[in-house]
Image 1 (cartoon, rainbow, N blue to C red):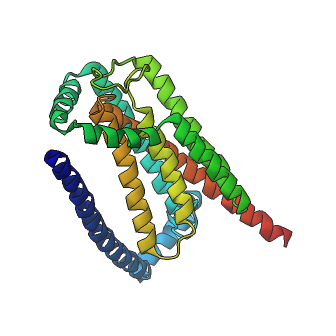
Image 2: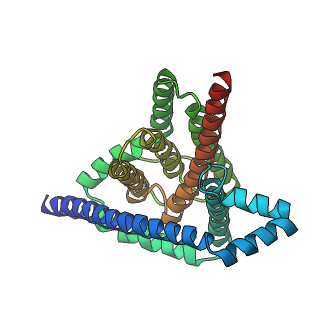
Image 3: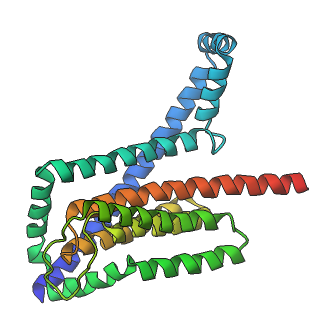
Length: 293
């Protein structure tokens, strides 16, 4: 009982400590970002730079137009979309790298086995019961219910442009997981508890679904929050929920570490796809309303 209490206190202290660190980093990054933006703006007013840019526009008009369109921060199709595409490509590369390491290298397998063994002291009756509840939140039934309820809410609030992206995160992530599981057919760890699973181990569908669906729901809510602090709290505690779902899969011996990491990568990729779909549909909807008026 004492050990369970210490584990709970340690987990709570860790979550609050990471929250403080994340808030400090966010404030620091925001300040640095504003300063960098101001310095770039000042540099753009320099006569020498302006002359070089003007000359480039005359010599390479199409290339300069395309480059400026991709880098402008004033439109979603500019810098935001460029960063999303770069992130998505990076996630695809990371996922491919994990698959290659799993198939061709032994280091990843040894790491998974070591982490699984390290979690043994934390597998008490209390932690197993608590994390079984978390793991249920990442199941297909729970995620589908969240998507259905969210769909009804955004439809009622007349934000229907969010719905395709929301469903894309769920369906896209689960199809990717299903296909990858069947292709790689990795065996799961030895089950130590009554909770079991029948599908292959790599990657984790719970981790992917949680990242994609709960991340997109947080995005929907964040768009209607006024202050940056509220958005930070929403994003942070959503991240804690997703992390706990992923951790529960390892502690309950349902997945290895690499399964969960790969699931997060798949979920993050489809989350980005959902972002792009929602923002593009929002722009079309607003453009259509503007033309109608």
